Length: 254
Length: 290
Image 1 (cartoon, rainbow over the protein chains, first blue to last red):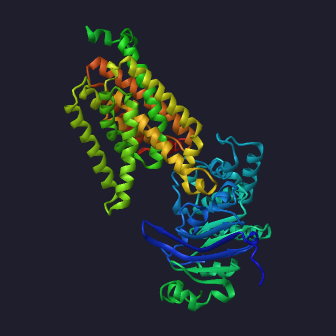
Image 2 (cartoon, rainbow over the protein chains, first blue to last red; image 1 turned 45 degrees about the vertical axis):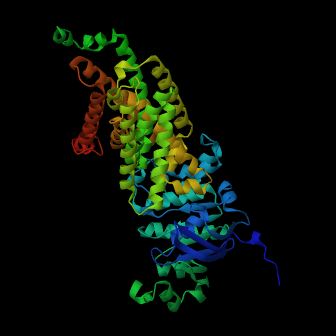
């Protein structure tokens, strides 16, 4: 039997549990992802998707289990800027007085000195990232004046500027325009080729089939995990959504 | 006679400056206003108005005990300010009572404790000056302490300016890239307690929360850039303090109340006439004439 080399896994979560003041949000969840893999995280609202993300970024502490990022602790992953989190649009205050450039620059904060003075390389990274998401015309636009899709691209640019090898995306396709959707899907292919690992939560079944190599169905714990073609079956989806059939949830076309 | 000298703007401004206590009051209040104004942009963006109210009221017993024991009042205020927040967090976590209720009951409890202590501890504490501020009667030792605390808060906020902005904007990202969010949380709380202490000398405990939220709210209506927001907040706080003190001097009004009223009027002005976010959107109005 071959021994597992944990270095091979970008993300290795083993039997993790998270509870908030005694209320269990997630239990016995497992996930292993390698470089270049895109995994969809599917579940109902309150099924623990955001909790899973929070555990991986270290925003909440796990009460049981183990998380290794590139074979190391979450703490050292934070220090190494390994993980980037792209929030869903509802998760941020769009009225905050900040423009596109400054948001993307926040992706560099972790590797700057204590005063967060941008160096030449930081400025270049931010410029490149903004160019990749096609927002060069909006450098000094306050985020409150952006469309939903542009705002989503701003936070994607922040993740790119951070040069993280793992991207966690919370509902990347919700509330975005066609152009943004196309741009994001192109970026996904580029990320995959660059060997980045992507974990994205989504409500949209079509996107899972389109982009995700793997799928993780959760309802407080893992319902099913594996190759999308094998695991993403109507039966599993029905179980994940508490007995409601996918046709009823998403219409017959999915 | 007072009315005559009042007629020229020049003497309106210069006459009070001939009094030593007025010069001191104007200087100290401007300093305090600058500190509170600086912090104000963070508190309004973080949504900590109620927290500001809670901390500023909770420092009351700390101030009284420190005075009674002959310790620097800032120390007592700091302990009770941070203590109140810890207690709020603890009760919220261990009970089913909602957060705003917990905040309300904790700070009124502390405040009541302070009032009871003042009546019991026989000392030279003037309840009126704690409750309503006394910028005109500030003592030399208070001046030194105020300058020290103000500089401390300004230096802390300046060093962690960007981190605190990120913490207010997106704490999850801050945590993800290895920035110590726990530290920033308590740094902001510490600055809040310290600012409440210096602020209460200007306008008193009851109104100090206005110093901590009104300038930030005014600035928020006037700009979309964080740095500008901080500058506008500080300036509007200083201007309000100067206006308030002059008005109270000439019309013999309560100083603390006058300062806060001046802030409120500046806010109302912004609320009505802010170019982009005011009720009368002046930017659109003028754009229509081009």
